[in-house]
Length: 383
Image 1 (cartoon, helix red, strand yellow):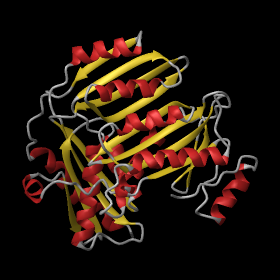
Image 2 (tube, one colour):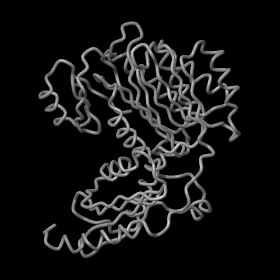
Image 3 (cartoon, rainbow, N blue to C red):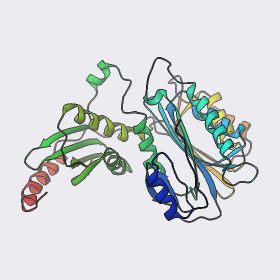
Image 4 (cartoon, one colour):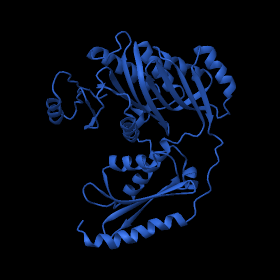
């Protein structure tokens, strides 16, 4: 586990200086937070002060429920939480406050205790014969101010956390890999020293955000891009180089880029049952909700939990642990029985969504046309 340092009294400039002097220390400031050694501005919100927790590790059925229960047992109120599960890995970012004071937790011994408890929960999935990656859970805490409303920042961080636990290493068998159509391909443009990354997949909201963030986090610079959408499918082309100015030279480097981009595309795709619950906020609410999900044999594959005033808004993508169809009516009755009055409970079944037909070659021709035009246009520039 990595030690996290905090500084509350120093000015932003002093803390920035301290962070440059010691890269192993994550500093905390009034209106800024540090993610991956980069300062990301927060909206000023002096009335809400929370402590942020980042968790990564190997996933298992009921893990998100166990994390929620552990925080409730530690007298922590979960103000906001976002979790992604992909390829047997879990990444979660949660904002918590002290149950009695509703303020940030800044006691070092208590923070260490919270980290130890959560690490123990995550470690239960560890494969003793494995090494590295998701087999070594990680829990980090840092005090943030005004964490609510920064969804773009949280999603960017979830991508980074998933990348750190190597969720692009799919557990599929060699036979499954051979029969699976690749969504990403990488070609070389030797004349201009680019690598051309082509992505062809089902279109959806925030697809470009996911792919661009992944390329940036992998230390690649995008010089040109072509983005089209046709018949429910998106076609993206990126002309990239590494930050050191080099193109992708080796087959292994190209394969890694392809795998990481495919993982970034898949992380947000959750076809199944989407549950939206809104209830009066109280301590332990998330723990109770996830317990009901677990007792009904449902596995959480993605979660977005936020607090708006006196209300807690919860959205979950779930699937049956045995792969069976979810009995929505039975589950709805169980929730209302166990949780009491629920303001709203919406259930959306995306399992049987009609998939668009496979795209024709026509949309791809635009990328080829743009490529040739860029080649001619860029001859007048020195790159």
